[in-house]
Amino acid sequence: MNLIEEMEEYAKVNHVPIMEKEGISFMLNFIQTHDCRRILEIGSAIGYSAIRMALVNENIQVETIERDEERYQQAVINIEKAGLTKQIHIQHADALEANVEGQYDLIFIDAAKAQYIRFFERYEPQLKTGGYILSDNLGFHGMVDGIVEPKSRATRALVRKIKNYIEYLKTNEKYETVFYSVGDGVAVSKKR
Ligand code: SAM
Image 1 (cartoon, rainbow, N blue to C red):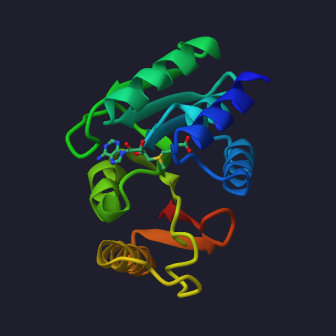
Image 2: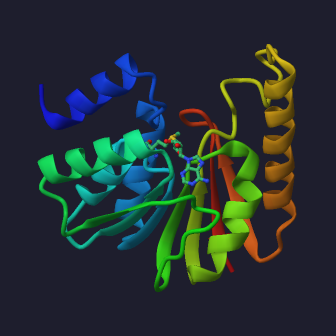
């Protein structure tokens, strides 16, 4: 088993939500074709997507933020095992309070869904003009489109928040957003 497979297995056994196969290949392809070099990720979990992104090519630098202590520690181990400490910098922090430096070509939002608008607004000033924000999980396992019924009131509230975020993206005139039904639903917003 290689490291990528090991991480996929770890995520499955320990119920860590990592990007779905279809979503990740869409994103890696996007990074390659748009030559995104400076990437900011909100929500590292165990470092799976950060590692996959850094492996696209050696010019890529990833800054990634994770607030959960155990996942952060696991991510640090995985980044070291992958030999990618020069390409990936991970912060153990709440992304709503963290600070990052510089300007990015791509911001990947993959953290607490209820906070997507706040993540977007906090970090979008650090996106270059012509850069992209990728948001994952906008389908929320079929619940946003009403294919699957939310089972609890809390889940229903989350579905509402995701719908608000989708509306926010659609009406944000500083960005042009395209929605893709790959993986669990991905939005690509380009800064005008
Ligand atoms: N991007 C990862 C991947 O595909 O390998 C998966 C990330 S997982 C879907 C979301 C992660 O975001 C969780 O590990 C969670 O602890 C973290 N998270 C949620 N809210 C956060 C916040 N406010 N700041 C930092 N991390 C947060």
